[in-house]
Image 1 (cartoon, rainbow, N blue to C red):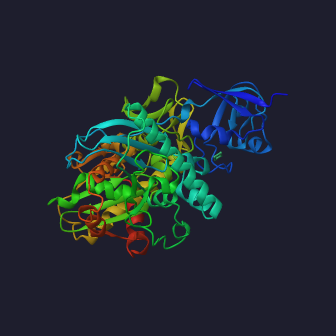
Image 2: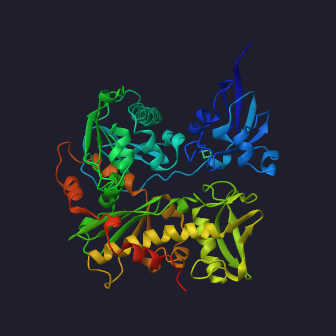
Image 3: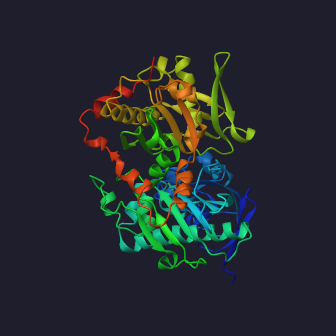
Length: 504
Ligand code: FES
C-alpha cells in the first residue's frame, strides 16, 4: 500500500506529498501557516479550511470549533494528521515582508556580502556588491521557528533544553543558508565567494541563531551575559558557502532590545542628530530609542500582540480578507478589505483605525468602555470588535506611550519640543498616523512622525561596509545607548495606567 498522500495548498498552487499520518503542523509552517501558540490548541489562529477530501476531526477540535466552523470545513492545523489526499485553503496566512531599497552612503570594499534581518516572523536577506553598494538580489522567508509559536517566549521555552536549542538553531540556520544560496543563484553568482554576512535581530533571535543559552531570557531580570557581537566562520556552523565568509551577528542592547534596534539607530543616524529623535518599533515588544548626539536611551515595553492583531477575537494578518482600514462615512463605519472580497477578520492597522473612528462616533468612551451598553462594534459582514479587543489595544498603546514618556522624562525633555518620531517595521509602515494620534498611541503632529521602513536591514547593510576589525562607530554606538529597564522604574505603572485612557 502506498502510504504517501497528496496535500494541495490553494490558492498558492503548491502540491506536496507527505506520509499518511503526518502532522499538518510539520507540513504547513514552511508554507506560511502560523502557529502562534506553538501548537498547544489554544489560539485557533492556525485554522485552515478543508476544500476537498477528508480530514478527521479530533476531540480537541470538537471542543474548540463551533458547529458552523466545522461544517464550513475549518480545522485546527496543529491538531490534525493527514489521513488521505486533501486540498486546503491557506491563502489567509500570506503576509507582506518589508525589505529595504533606500540609497545609502558607504565606503566601497571588494567582494560581495549579505545583510540579513532575522525577524521573529519573517527573514529578509539582501546580497550586495560591496564595490558599488548595489543590491543584487533579495530573498524573504518565514522564520521556520514559527512552528513552535509566534511569540518569543514559546520559542525560548522550547530552547531551554539542549535538544531544543540545537533544533531551533539548526532550523533557522538552514533557512538562512538556503536564502543566501538562492540570492546568489538569482544574481547569477552561484559559487561566488562571499566576504561577509551581517545579521541583526532581537535578543532572542540573536541567542537562538548563535546557539547561546536562552535561560537568562526566560526569567526576571531577563539579562544575558552574551549580548555582545558574535563572530564565526561559515564552516563553523556547517555552512558550505564559497569563500567561507565571516558571519557577524551584531550586538544587542539589552534583554529585549536587540541588534535590530542598534541597526535602526545606525541607519537613522540619530546618534549624530542635534535634534531630539525617537525610533519606535511597534511590535509585541515595542522597542524605543530616544535621544540625540549627546545621549541616547533605549527600552522595550511589553505591548502584547494587538498591533499584529494577536489576541483580537477576529484578528488576522494583513492579507486577503483582512479589514486594513476604517473610515467614517455618513455616520457609519466604512471598511476597506484587502483583496476586495468579503471581510474575514481585521489586521493591526484596521484595528487602530476602527477604534479611532469609533471614538469619533462616540461608540467608545475615553475609558475604553463600549458606549450605550453596546456588546460589540459591528464592522463588516461577520466581523466585529469586542470590548476585549478594545482593551487589548489600550494595553498595547499605553505600553508604547508610557515607555516613550518615561525615556523623555529621563532625558529631561518632557516639556521641550516633541521629538521627531521614526516609525520602524511593518506595522509602522502601514498604520494610519491620524488614527495612531487619535487613540493616543503617538500623540505628535503628522510632520513629526515618519515611517522609515526596515531600518534593521538598512543598518545591517551599513555594517557590511565596516572593516572587519572595526571598533569605532558600531561598538561605540552600542555602548553609548543606555538601556532602561521599565519594570524597575517606580513611575512606570502610574504613567501606564494614565496612558490607558483614550484622548477626549
Ligand atoms: S491553536 Fe494555536 S497554533 Fe494551533
